[in-house]
Amino acid sequence: MRLTVLGCAGSFPGPESACSAYLLSVDGFNLLIDFGSGSMSALQRYAGLHSVNAILISHLHCDHVLDACTYVVARRYAPDGPLPPLPVYAPDGAPDRIAAAYSLDEGPVDDVYTFYSLQPGTFPIGPFSVTVDRVNHPIETYGVRVEHEGRVLAYSSDTAVCDSLLRLAQGADVFLCEASYLDGVDNPPDLHLTGREAGEIADKAAVGRLLLTHLVAAWGSEALTQDAAQAAFDGPVEIVRPGARYDI
Image 1 (tube, rainbow, N blue to C red):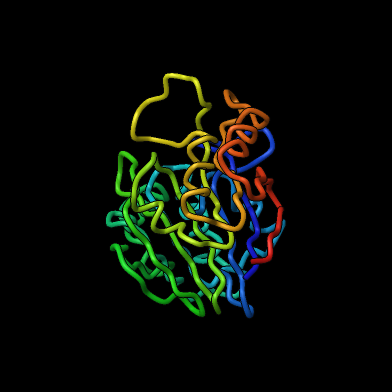
Image 2: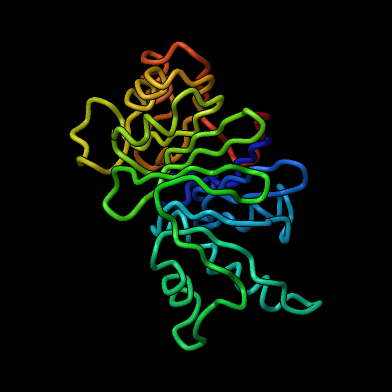
């Protein structure tokens, strides 16, 4: 599997990155995990406008879903005619949310997307075996585990510490984990992780590599976040960048 980071900014686009969007590819099949604000630009830069075969949306906050609304234009009004509906795996409410954000007057987007409601469990998407489970965030949110031929990517989505995230990350070759908050600050509960917490989960889950994402450039610190994660986890730790590619 190859992971391409399209966007990794936390909560809103940063000065150098769109919001969360990660392309996971194998054997010509491209699964887009989250489609946050501004990431459609990066999709064209690093992969191609029509390179996506399926989309998984972890939750319906704007920084993880909004460019699925923008993408309606690219598929509905392509010069060679409308493209066939693209499968979208997302929490309940995604069809209405995306349709309303695109237009209040043009109705459903089922000509563009075929929606499948996420529920905790395991199911196939193309060549991948995907497991999702609810994580600790204010709205319905799913952490993700993707497996192919014995290799595993785990993705935290947005979450505070919870047992389900530890289960999803267990033994993963790569753990793509949010680290939105700084340690030593009075952070709001049940919302996001710190670098230390991401490192502690990676250590308990015995992952191979920790990739930190969803940092908020406006009030975070990459150096402090990475140091805190590295103090808790002995394995490789890296803060991801747009355009970065990782073979899993």
